[in-house]
Image 1 (cartoon, rainbow, N blue to C red):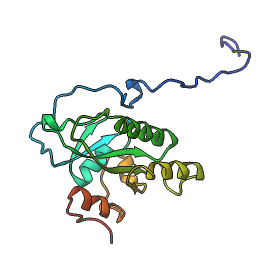
Image 2 (tube, rainbow, N blue to C red):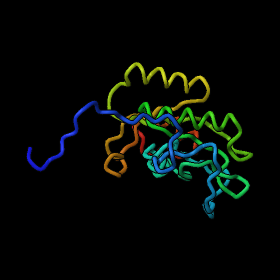
Image 3 (cartoon, one colour):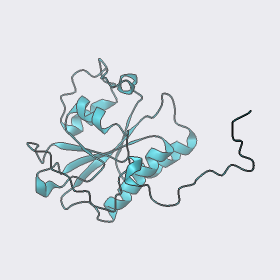
Image 4 (cartoon, one colour):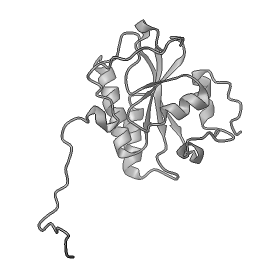
Length: 184
């Protein structure tokens, strides 16, 4: 085509060999992130920690209560929630981010007093997970309690469903939500 540059030769895709940068929406788990604490929040309230951008922490906080603390560890010494749920999507990238966050927690990168209650894996698409992703979920389950959240179409559009799926009942009990509005 006239006026259009055509690149000849092989196309080389960039492969990430280093940890993701903060601009990728994923936390650098080995580095502390300084933020202003959420004022007026109880340390006993649940904190939703997202392993990566778009994990679903905000939707879970809106649906079940608690605090979306972002992609960082909360600091109970500053009045932030000590009880946390780590949130990630069931995509390969999401499960990798969850694994890195769990590794950082194991290595003592979180502030003193943080209590991981479990991992919430939010479906990244409707339907069943491919076998490769199921294997990754099993690995995560071998080191932490895992609660899976099904695909919720209303969350995709930024809203809340009229009734929460019954699978959220255990999660609602864990975080102290009343559980009303869930399907039986």
